[in-house]
Amino acid sequence: TPYDYIVVGSGPGGLVTADRLSEAGKKVLLLERGGPSTWETGGRYGPEWTNGKNLTKFDVPGLFESMFSDGNPFWWCKDVNVFAGCLMGGGTSINGALYWISPYSDFAPTTGWPVSWGNHAPYTAKMKARLPSTDAPSTDGKRYLMQSFDVAAALLKGQGYTQRTINDEPDSKDHSYGYSAYNFQGGMRAGPVATYFRTAKARKNFTYKQYVYVQNVVRNGPAITGVKTNDTSLGPNGIIPLTAKGRVVLSAGAFGSPRILFRSGIGPTDMINVVKNNAEAAPNLPPQAQWINLPVGYNVSDNPSINLVFTHPSIDAYDNWAPIWTNPRSADASQYLKNRSGVFAQGSPRLNFWRAYSGSDGKTRWMQGTVRPGAASVTTSYPYNASQIFTITVYLSTGITSRGRIGIDAAMTARPLIGPWFTDPIDKAVLIQGINDLISNIKSVSGLTLITPDNKTTITNYVNNYDPGSLNSNHWVGSNTIGVAGKAVVDENAKVFNTNNLFVVDASIIPQMPMSNPHGMIMSMAEQAVTKILALSGGP
Ligand code: 6FA
Ligand code: ABL
Image (cartoon, rainbow, N blue to C red; front, side, top):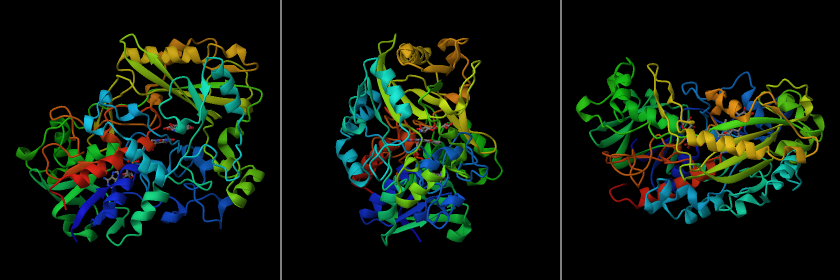
């Protein structure tokens, strides 16, 4: 059957888009390559201690850190060589669920957004109405495991920071800190899956199909006629057609959407030639005369992030989150099962902070930090007490000038071709300054010790020698950037240049790093994009 709109990918971009299109009465098909996540969506993967409670790994916030230590991590995309979620909800089903309301700068024309995007407020308001944030996710309203908050707050106060309810004052991002805010509801992961997807799937004009991999769009020059999938039960050769005026929206993520474009003959010639040399993909490419040359994969950014590990005698490192899957602290597990309260009602972060810096090029860049008990790794010459460790991850966000490139290799694996971190040395200099400031008053907090790096390593050397792969913060944007013809991949209506009816709505169209962990900003962006798409003439 033909559809008015085919949306590819069920991450935050795709779910908001598919819900709003179906709300407008369009006949919508949502395709997702992965399977279910939360219990509500049919997921059944949970630890033994939640047996019989209708909970999965993707429902229980406190299981977040086990995403990285599980022996069977089926949720990661196997053909993307950085972390990416391939299941219902995309990244929002496996991420840290930090959820931030955008400041003005997230959509400001000075950061690359078309002027028509400048007022994000009505769209962010629509998102908040569907999904409010909480910085006290335990259902009893109490906060748990707050030692790392208290220690970090003491450090930051000494540097002139002010505590705020972050999402009540989204534009106050200089010398600001507060409790970590989340997309949780009722002590469980919520995000777009428990909100937008829930309303979409109740509509008769909405169809959802999982485990369907979209290889490319089918097109005749600029006119898209359908999508080609790996599922031949859905149509001849796995092709699903559009209605006469139908449209395709790619929401397959910052790596997934570029790959579909390359395989559809859209992008830089070198990438389309990689497809042409792949025996399976080549036959589906349009003839070379129909290739559309666009800068797909360029202009990519991701926050460079550096972990600092500390100890303090007050800290409960929560066994570094190691036993949370097989052998959790029993009082905490039963408290959670009883009424969704306690430590397990929250992810690992406890405090977030922001500070503005001006670089030697006169540009403003923001530093962001996340504080959590435990540490991913410790490198130190000091003796230390492992039950007292906590991490401050320091990110550089809005204002960064470094850019990288992503693409595909011969096996069609999507990967960074040029890392987007510190290609401009001024970004690195600002982050080094930020870290030095952060630890400048460490002696004023009694008992606080920086163990990674230790005192044999300067901050400058620590940053210079940091494993480039570890700078990845999983916040990739920009690979199908929005903007003007000749420089961008999509126009101000999120339509791919030189096509009639192909759109992209996901992290890939965002022209520059937002202020904070991005999924809230992505949902607001999708609210605005889908409004523009529905208003654009010529559609179904
Ligand atoms: N963002 C936040 O705001 N807060 C966080 O705490 C946070 N933490 C993390 C985190 O801990 C990890 C490990 C990762 C990987 C990301 C984190 N992020 C966080 C970032 C955030 O999750 C992403 O920025 C956000 O999910 C991106 O949203 P998009 O809509 O752009 O894309 P997704 O990757 O979420 O979804 C794409 C979907 O398309 C997936 O479900 C995928 O399976 C599907 N797909 C891809 N290719 C496809 C194809 N060819 N056919 C069909 N489906 C396809
Ligand atoms: C995010 O936005 C980041 O993308 C994640 O990297 C981060 O989680 C979460 N939010 C929470 O702050 C970290 C984990 O806490 C680490 O244990 C893990 O090693 C790291 O992600 C991997 O990138």
